Image (cartoon, rainbow, N blue to C red; front, side):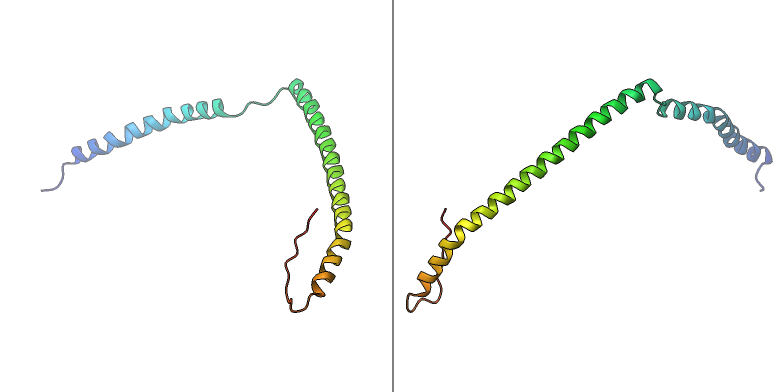
Length: 112
């Protein structure tokens, strides 16, 4: 027995019509929600305040960079001084250890 054409039409319309209604009503609702969620443009008056803050931050970062460079230069200078002061002592200890007969290897600690 062939299927009833009225039943087929009823089934098709029971899916198509609600789908069309959802699409027709749903599209404007989705656009409304997406526009509501979009970031709003910043007014020009607030941009000038932000620019001022960014300039102050840039100045602060530049001054911090200068101070860090000064600290690193001081650290290099003090490390060079320490190595120059320890060099004569280390050389004397190595010569003293080399003069002991039968000693192949000696561990020498750097003492301040």
